[in-house]
Image: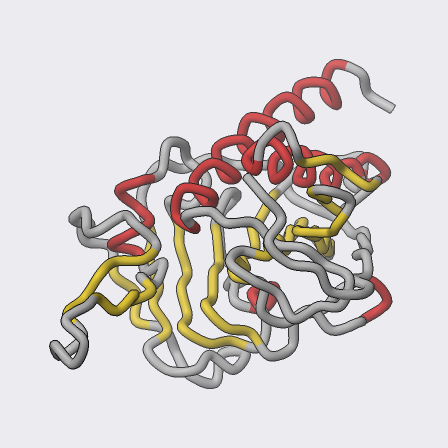
Length: 250
């Protein structure tokens, strides 16, 4: 793993609190694909619950370039359900909401989304960081829904749980700047935005392949592999956190 870029100041992210119902786990896959730009429900999703067949798992694949120079053109593979679902190793992400473009993944998850549901977009226009600062395209942008039990006072700890999952997926060179930034070589490569209102939605942005943010860095990784690794580690981290919270009530 290596930091490929440097830019200047990327901010950190907050956590709001509220109430939440008990967490429930379900293994069935629920997929929604927003075929046009998703604008807070103005465009309705097509919901598909059929089985998903594996496709190319590499983030970039070679395609013929029209033989102008006899070479290859790199074509980015979108993280659509048919690519992501066969690769998952746990229950997180089995409910998967995808949009090619969206204002923010934080608003893509429907009210009836289940614990562990994931929303992902290739491009977002209204992503937020700490104090409402802009956080737009990061290479890998997704949100994960959690339904932790009370006490609400323990929920801010989930930001650090997510940061540990991201850092672990990136590798030993990644460090955490408490509570929600992940650094490589002293440069921020990822951030967590946790919001709560009856449930917790973790927004995760990882700079993959480049960044426009001053002072930030980025990593060179296959996005699908990284997404799957983060979700698996986040699920395990959440389970450990939940066990500790229930065994040591506050």
